[in-house]
Length: 463
Image (cartoon, rainbow, N blue to C red; front, side):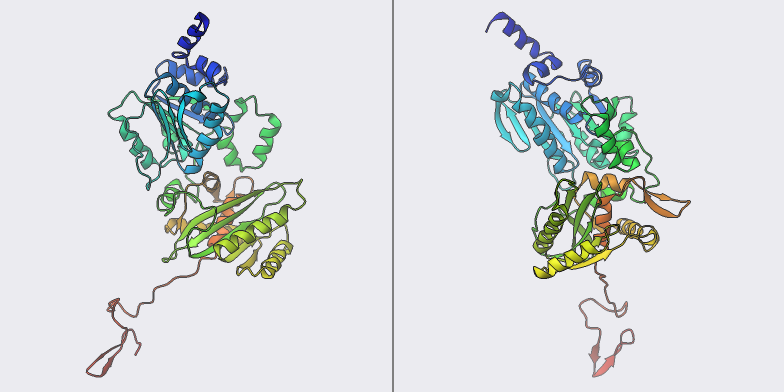
């Protein structure tokens, strides 16, 4: 190895931005991403990155994880997300592309879906912050990265941080778009953290035209949080974070299904999007106690260049209804008319799919009044009747709905929240489950009618 090359390797072991440029073939932006790296260089141990979508926060944290692991033998990094989808995105869409274009591929001795190991003994592993997951506590880790940190439950963040008690020099990086005024907002304003706020517009790769398109697909509250990185007061939301956390915490499954995995009674809702919206299918599993367990969300983005788009939506819905043996499917046909629903009914009947398809036209009353969708969905949340794995888009849309006290109705601030509408449509189909009691004197194992010395005893007027 000649002198210049030796000098380059020596510098790479100490200089984080230099390593990223020379060995990861990735250059951090001077006007924003370098601010985070400068904070690390100056000894920051707790960092909050409040950022807009597509700003590049996940690219930055994956580059930091790879660089520190390569520079420091035996360095242990843990990546925590609110759900497996977010952890998989961190690894699959950001970390592994970094590796493919880097010069350190030869240093990787083990490469799994959510774990990589370096020849110097360093390791990066992915975990989820879920009540049912094991090994969450960040014990022994030198770097803790929380991706979509604002959507991790407060209680789970506390459990992970307990591992830092005997490792105070461990680095903690939270990166996320905001989610109301929860623990992420508290950390952002905590003087113990070095905090940064980066809206999507700071990324020069995002054109103004694309940004406008993205903004047009979101509700106003979604855009403020996801694109402008603004903290929004969610105290008037009919779906407060504490109820959403309870629904996720009590879910019997950690990840959404792609096909039926258990026998059961299934119901579904389909929100058909227009040309600028998404079409979303939401499938619930009805539990024995009448509670609903979310199991599948299928999204179709409208493709104006595909003349068979609607046929594909119907075909996909038919396949999933057949696979899950869905009993009832409520379909939003507002604006599209009943033609789509009639086509679905005909196709289901021709192919002998035993699913009852109901057309549903959204009106002022059905969306907003007491008997409406949003109120019924809100009541199910309050009664702890709904359970589902973490789903970032679904939760963001729930938080974008507000109660307008002047109009006395629920309204989405902006475009239609398609995931919420599909979930609400499906939840309308839940069968009524009631327990018949003859009287308070009855014992569960006893018959309601007893005979004693051939005398009929009446309970509750039943003889």
